[in-house]
Amino acid sequence: MRTHRFVIERIRASGQGAQHDGLNGPDSLFAGFRALSDLVGEQPELIRFLGYFDCTFRRRGLTPEQRAELGEPHQMVVLPVELLRQGQRDGSVRTDADATTAAVAVGNAAFGILQRLQATDEYTTGRDEAAQRLFDLEPDVWRGYLSPPRSS
Image (spheres, rainbow, N blue to C red):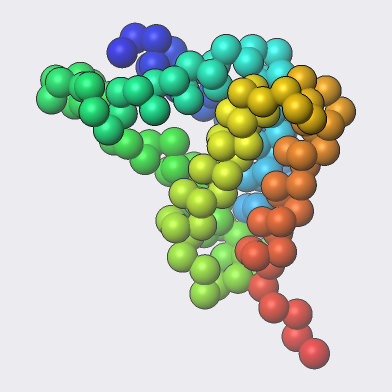
């Protein structure tokens, strides 16, 4: 459990260390994901460990004590939810989107693609330009969903 806590704290610190000054909610969120992508490029073992842990232990294999030590399963979602709510307040995120659901979906997509980039080698090494292009596509797709409708 100590390893899991270390990995989560390292990932959280990278996202919080991203430059957010002057950015709206979704841009801050995507700056954090860019920092995560950079971290995974430098230390791919972090995302590999999370994938292994999640697939091996999260649903089964933890004692009640370990589950309690693991803590709130969505603790990584708190910052993204607040950033999306900030975007709803500043007009950069559509107000009819459920911020919690969107934060879980965006986070799972980002973590999922980073994990997948480390597990496959048909198209990319996980740290090359192809990987960067794939990861850069995520914010573009999510901006389309999160953007408020344009007024005519």
